[in-house]
Length: 82
Image 1 (cartoon, one colour):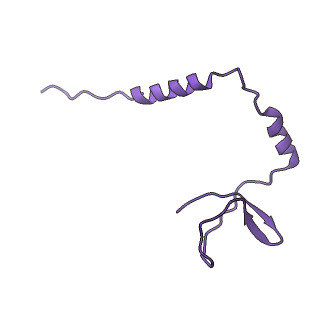
Image 2 (image 1 turned 120 degrees about the vertical axis):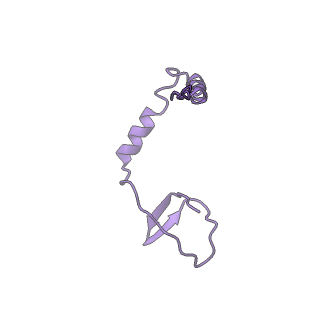
């Protein structure tokens, strides 16, 4: 099973933000990725929330993506006549 879970490091212990379905003593592999998120990062993210609201037809965009997936973009070679 591969799963990503957010955790907080405090007092020398990683504390997951959600319940984990693990047995006591079970060994797991922990990968630390990304950089520290600063308060400025959070403020920037919060200030931009909703900036696209009313400017993009999200449902229409999703419909177009699904239509494009159905039609495909690659050409299929026809077999040569003998």
